[in-house]
Length: 91
View 1 (cartoon, rainbow, N blue to C red):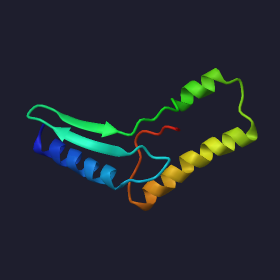
View 2 (cartoon, rainbow, N blue to C red):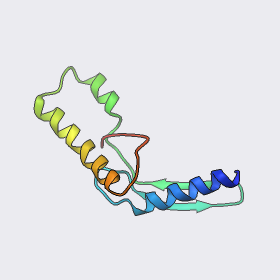
View 3 (cartoon, one colour):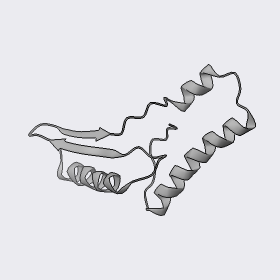
View 4 (cartoon, rainbow, N blue to C red):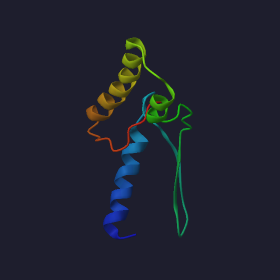
């Protein structure tokens, strides 16, 4: 890795270690050896929102509101911490 890449990775890890919200995946552990850097994330079993949409014919208004509420709560939390999202998922 270049020095810039390494600095970006360290910055991202520092941010991820600060996150503690039920709608944002948690970084559990990090491991490093001479060739690799490992990030162990919280197990998320809910699947992809896109797949849910494909499998389901329609969402009720309540189901849609509950789904969007989780997403907005996680985004609000991250934005308050000064973190910009790059990969959104719903649990």
